[in-house]
Image (cartoon, rainbow, N blue to C red; front, top):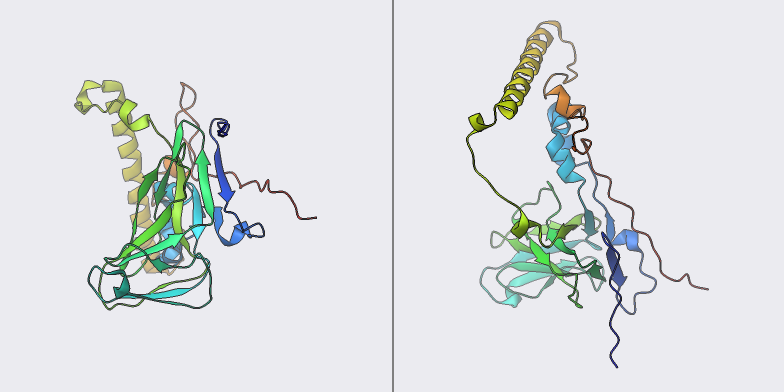
Length: 270
């Protein structure tokens, strides 16, 4: 009689290491999403880090990492042979050409499985830049699919050398409730139809205008005095300081997410 796997507990993602990879170092292939971005560090005063929705997106989910540096060039056309890949080291999970049409493919050393209510949304790493290449997003029914998925990027220009560095994220994975989109009510109404919410919108907008006016005044003063700007007042203080509604069924506001660290439950070598 064929064996069937036991269902996973709710809110569970399990990454099965593929056979033959017992000594795999997980940290070389998987990590929790991080908050920092090189291009954000380069922004004057790094003021972009005050955009809380951006930071929240940066920290959502887990990232799959490129194990080895690869230099990829697409000659144009649809054949897999038109993709030239130079890899600095041999690695079974380095970039490859599988689908053609300028698509770069990574196989991953894990077979992901989720509890019955979840699938996995596979996206590009949030708010990371890459020249001449775009990630291809996917949703995978990891609640039942007994087969690993791939991560794919499409090169957007022929004859442009694209480098994927070792250790850089090539994908982000996020558990996603299977039924939520089809069970969510999506309504369109006039804002004036909810006077209480309209009042909140107006109050929030006025507070934001005051903060922006303060920032502009600080900038004018800094031009005259040469003082260093701190960036205070650039963004609405309530949102930056994670102050939302208290009680009333509202979840506490978060500026960032902190995904749980993967627990390595593999048997230790003797």
